[in-house]
Image (cartoon, rainbow, N blue to C red; front, side, top):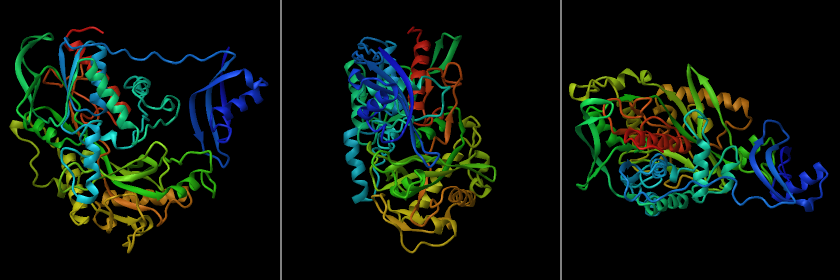
Length: 544
């Protein structure tokens, strides 16, 4: 017999399967010896009040053994002799596009400018001693994309784009913890995600696909072809050229991520329709993890023995724009996420156990294309006949670049990041020293309140004041404001048809994922990659 139960219990009672089993037996009046297994289906923590509870949805097996698998794994068959599709980028959008292509009977050829996930890790480790970033192998470029060494959180608020649950199941099938199938905010962890990504690559190769590392796309191949939707020759994308002189032929899923600025510039210069997209920019805020635990769990002793490192989510409206926390990393660390020279960009990540000394979050301000200050726009050329009259399509990207260059200059033109104590930032005071930090390349005291753009500085300060009033102890000089957080999403949208997912003027090109402006995080990028694979199948006339 099986029975599904909804439980609201203390953290100690929810600590592991044995403690849950004891609670269920006691509350239901069952003999504990008859309970063969308790499987957690959903789990969330309710910390809104002083007494903390864990909400559980469980399936109890009584006098019978549970099935080995609660879901049917995806089957991936050999596609060695099937039509090929080019997938540019091996981030979540590209990897899930490739896996879905295999399901649909198509052969993926994955082209990735960076290195495989293990060699990439070595380049990341060199940033601290060498104080420079490899422009082709960094926290943005390489196998796994920006998510591989950027925490591995699998939570998305978007329920309209597709089957996010399937993305979690595929991750689990490739080695992720089963907890991601039940946790309200699933998280693989920076330490475990690389192996999962390697397993996904092995599936692609085993089924006859190809994966080419250190292979940068230099151009799209475009020629006139007759296509099904119309009976006249139309410029179509039929493959890519690479920087080492090779060509790969087939429809193209373009999943290059939010930092491939050379790709945006090539598209812009060659008349591929783009548009500027709103994003959010700001800083990374780092607190001692113990302090966040005390605040969030309403307990001067912190989280104790049975609760995970505390998370938070902050939202505030200031002068008509949203200010909010982004990519909160409990028990994590701040990392140097630049993707080229003369940039400082910060991001955050957490290992699977989230047991670090600090907790951090991006604190960012909503920015729309019309918000850019006129002094920034003055004298900049944004359109020309050769570029299809795309007025200002790259303006948000250029604004990102300018902020990152300013931050690099403030950091002594190294990867040391400019920083300021939180209360000093709010009160426009220079910090004469800084707290210890998880940011490995080091911090340098800098007046962020002075050089950050006024529209960003003012809104951050007002939001910090509001959150300090809401959560006693949050606004403190124990916390550090670190500049700058600019890579929250793509600054550009590659315009595509809403139905076919092809570029609006170039059939055969399928812009995909976060870099194309249609996703925001690992899960939504994976969902969009799958959708583009399905659109390619329809384009080629191949049925699922």
